[in-house]
Image 1 (tube, helix red, strand yellow):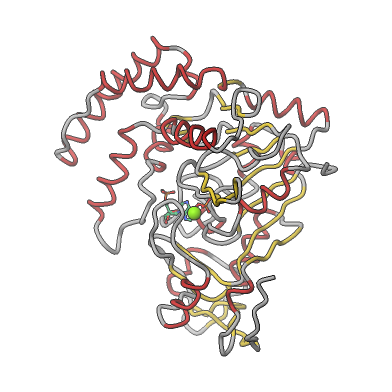
Image 2 (cartoon, rainbow, N blue to C red):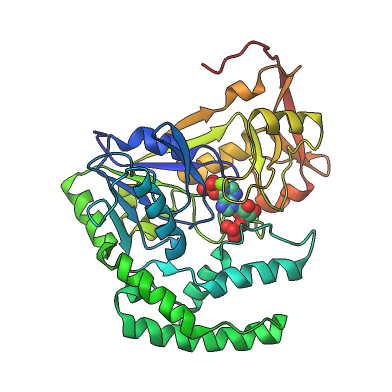
Length: 386
Ligand code: IMO
Ligand code: MG
């Protein structure tokens, strides 16, 4: 068992291999907790020799005795959750209210969130688009902040409350979507039927997960917090507006899981030996050339959630240090070094220049104008994958 809690966070733009590291650490803890994001994540674990991408269910599910928690900070999509539960059960993984808990305070992703995500991106057009995963994440968190148009997982356990909320909100969404996008109306009644059924299937797992985790922390039972996305996609500290809509760094753990800051524990920051990014936004070390193609093909850099080819470039130590500082990283886990085998030389970005001046502190707002400063390293050609 770990002697204290641990938090695993991505230090780049996501896809740093969080699933693998969480799965490796999970046998040493009692709880594995998702505290941010939603089904926009794609965390890969190996189930029965087969790779399996999880979007919502925490990556501790393969370990007996681990309780997997979807905490209040998550944008919870019951459709994806039930699909994952079914797929995992098909592979012989036991998942029930004993090892999977969902916070009653997690906000639900509704069909109108996914619809608005797509409509809004389409309207923004090329160049301005965020390049979201179309999973309804931004619109769900918008409604969370708006309060009166939000539905929480706890409502799934009360069919009458749920039905009333869905009907009222569907009417508001129909009026706004019609005015903004001339969209066809959403049928509130069929959503009531659909979500009532999800509630029936999930009710036993929905509870006060904050209380559960605070008690566990007080008893000294080790908790592992599984970050989603990457620090440069953080809503406050990333390359805004080309970010996701939640607090994904270790700073998001207390609010997103309902635990005190002291419960964050040891922070493990994940980096790849190069950088990738999916979607729009600045990326100073991007290589839109033969090198980027080499990294993409050798690293299989295609989206787990959307299948999109990832943008690829050199490792950015300047950005990684910024991200490590925000989360107070204690340890780094570096992966995919073997992808670099066979390159003539390897560049590492150690700083940025803006208008010819070196920046002494990274500011994500300056990234679009930043010229990377590289240190060129020697290379190797042998296979180091083992
Ligand atoms: P994991 O957990 C990579 C990116 C999207 C887009 C931006 C906003 O697998 O590392 P959103 O759908 O969240 O509104 O999209 O954030 N993005 C990710 N990129 N890995 C992820 O998660 C991501 N989650 C969101 O591509 O640029
Ligand atoms: Mg991903």
